[in-house]
Structure formats: C-alpha cells, structure tokens
Image 1 (cartoon, helix red, strand yellow):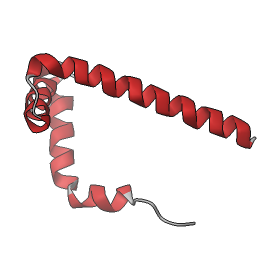
Image 2 (tube, one colour):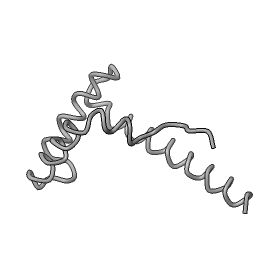
Image 3 (cartoon, rainbow, N blue to C red):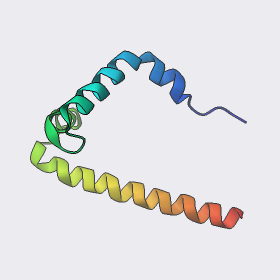
Image 4 (cartoon, helix red, strand yellow):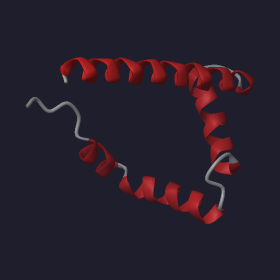
Length: 81
C-alpha cells in the first residue's frame, strides 16, 4: 500500500490549537452556527477573496461537489463488488 496522507501526523502538528478550538465550541454550547462559526466564515471568506454575503453560495457549491464525489465513490465501490 502506498501511503497517501497521514492525518495523524498532520493533526499532531496542530494538536494544541485543535483541542483549544474544540473546547471553545463545546463550552460555548453552539455546535452549529454561533460565534466560532461566524468567525470561521468571516476569516475563510477573506482567505478565498469573497465577501461574507457570497460565502453561503460557496458553501453550497462545495457541498454539491462533495455529494457528487461521494456518488462517484459509491458507484465505483458498487462496480468493484
């Protein structure tokens, strides 16, 4: 087997930061939406160079692409079986 990407190794690099972020979300009680999500949307929309008003469109587009990708994987798995 050819290793693709060790998420364990990547996660280990940022373990403290990830744990702090998860703790903030859990302690806030806002698992969906809320201040952490708001901050993420703002930062990510700036990162990709779009305004926050367009971010929802971007998320919907990403979700559609993910669904298409999952459908492709399911078809390939069905053919393999």
